[in-house]
Image 1: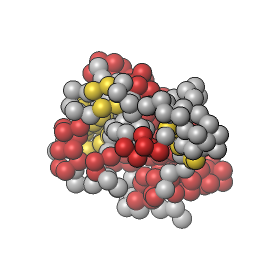
Image 2 (image 1 turned 180 degrees about the vertical axis):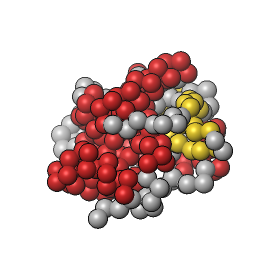
Image 3 (image 1 turned 120 degrees about the vertical axis):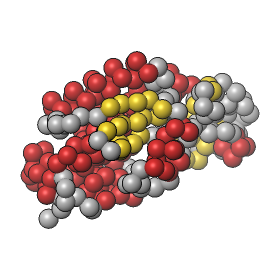
Length: 243
């Protein structure tokens, strides 16, 4: 987001900007930037997925969230379509990155209330704001379950499944892993590599710009990958230490 230095019209309310406004980078790979007046920048409701300001054309979801038209364009809301995309993503991560599971995991597409309850029950709480969690892998007795939030755009859905699949792999192969930077950095690396293989370069680039353990961990894993290769990254995670 940045200040605009030349006259345009606000994309939400149509006001003339007279050389002052706000520009938001588009979430869609081929969409133009969103240009807003200061009033809309401050007061417009935000998409519950990407956080972009929205106008009256926002789309409601059954659980009360509202998403922008760009996110809605490829939003995964049908359980059968979600299961098929989950299976495709799992096949890629297993076949191309070598993260096969011995036990496996069930999959479920959930609304926001269900996901928040699962987060509260999870023995390993996600890092960061629990209200921003979009996916979770957890063990309930002998059962392994991956839950992904309904309404995510296709690319973010794939990214989330790849990340949580990495956590499932860690649960089977990394008994000594306690470092949150390595745990989340490795999961982000799996998601990052998956997005690059799909050609989702813009979303992959956004992952590198993250702050906190997700972005820092990913950047550190990528630096190590240059030294030890992908197989070395898997061995490093299995050892449970960056050293």
